[in-house]
Length: 453
Length: 80
Image 1 (cartoon, rainbow over the protein chains, first blue to last red):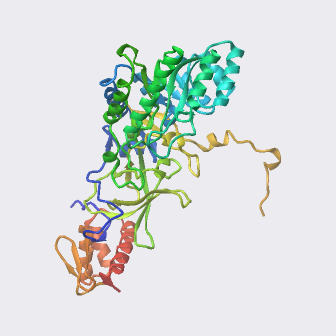
Image 2 (image 1 turned 120 degrees about the vertical axis):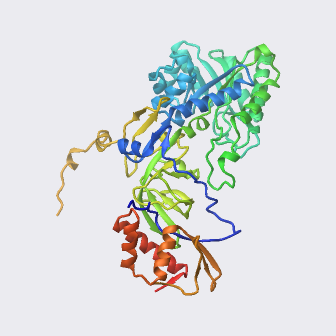
Image 3 (image 1 turned 60 degrees about the vertical axis):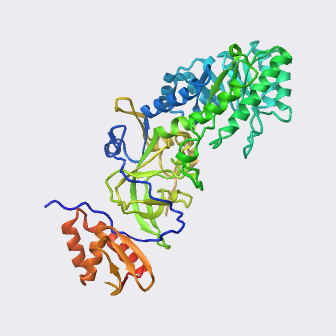
């Protein structure tokens, strides 16, 4: 006789009508497959933990976003935000869809070049551009977004040295009614810093001011802030034209669109509280269309959204290492992935799904990572079905920032695979090895030997 | 370990402790173990019953039974 499927025995106190910090149960079905590929087979072949990228989800999300804007505004250009996920295969899916590259360092700039992005389709943002970076960007006719006056003055000097006329924009920061106001990047709108920089660029006449850029924040839960930003940039562009007879050809609204993840401490789930692409598009496009442009003069709208385009396409498959009971009675589950590779656990209440069948019985508990560090908490409060050592889980929506902000700390960073449109699996980043780490270390000769008594 | 005499258990796994007023739910295997405890089966007998009926190895069940027993006692459903 075939034995019954085993589930750990649980008993749970019922607290009818009371507030519950664990929230309601959210898991009803196991996630056994990602894009038609078995989670257990993926882990069997590529190890655990394992990052899995869905090419299909990337393309669908990109197209949804692009459509939301192009339905409302005639000239839209996406630029893939490299810092959000700069694994080359991921970048190239976006480039195949038509995205330019948006980079914030020389490292990212060269990555984009090596991926085959033409220099004039690279937007170079950020406060840290070395002389060599700037010269490279000028050589390739990239769009250089100036962040501060020191950079502006240095760029003027370099421009004289190389005797070329770079295409530039300034980054503008402004009050859009949200807190915190991001005023550490770029030139402020309200205090006149932006005009000061614009005057210097145009009167100096060594650079071609072609655009205006802003990036008002991150995980913006109100689309209206973008409407304010778009209006202010459009107003600035209009007055630049009025004052200098200089046409601003593009307005870059940056990124910051929220994904469907749930922020820590948020009352509502992310899929309820985050604005949709249509919400953002309606706010931005309406503001630009209502600005003082004729139909023929509408500037190109550039968007650098990263998180909202890639978060849902990434999953982290992992394995239960152990279960234990904490002194206050809560169940603690220890996973084989920690905050070293799932950095976004600090921001999000990530959704976890078991990758095998389970019953409708659940337990309230906490999910820890494997690191011997107290900070290694994946979920402080979560309601999950009973799972045993060796069971697999899928963490959803981890595509943004984890594969760039992850740390080689205590354990190595794992393999990353991409599932293509035909459900074929490709290894796109190899897991690290001890040799890989040791290769970049040097041992002084006098430290090579020692004796232990 | 014994289940307290005044504990009420329904067929659906609903448990009520009239002394404290607390109510609990348990899953089918938990329900089965509580019944075996009510029948005064000892740990070894319970283990053999579960191992013969469920797809589980001995060490996994021992760890889970230890945890479950502690929960029952802490919840004042069972006593030594």
